[in-house]
Length: 186
Image 1 (tube, helix red, strand yellow):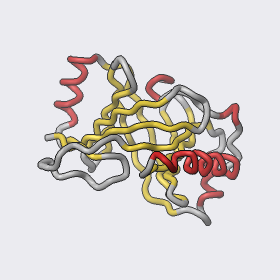
Image 2: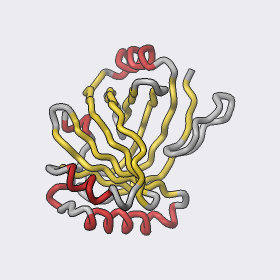
Image 3: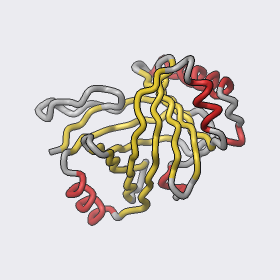
Image 4: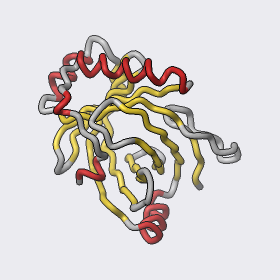
């Protein structure tokens, strides 16, 4: 069974109708010193969890489609569209939860083809409405991701500026920014 929901919302009841896309402001950057970022976050942010995530990326014509598997949690099928810019940028995200990731992975792999499989350990922090991810990605290195959910398109600019300020506070340089997904880098 698959149930759709938007990013950062509670899972939908499967009998509910599908939700629309979720708008995010986001950035991704290489980070040679996750401990420094963690030290900045500790007195200011709330630590939520550390999770091992396995993302299977499927071949699609537009956007990106991945199945995220996390032990002890329902898997999520995640489709998103965003520009490949090494900058703070907007993205549109759709999520669907599934209790049978194996069957979904086999089905989508047969229909679409698998482009990449990425395994990472992710620390999840919250700071002023921003989800901060400290990622250690197998074969790729360490990264910081910042995501802020935007409820109204009119406030997207404010969220982009908010992430830009957090980027500066964390000491993330422009040449550290990454324009691609982990699936593209793998």
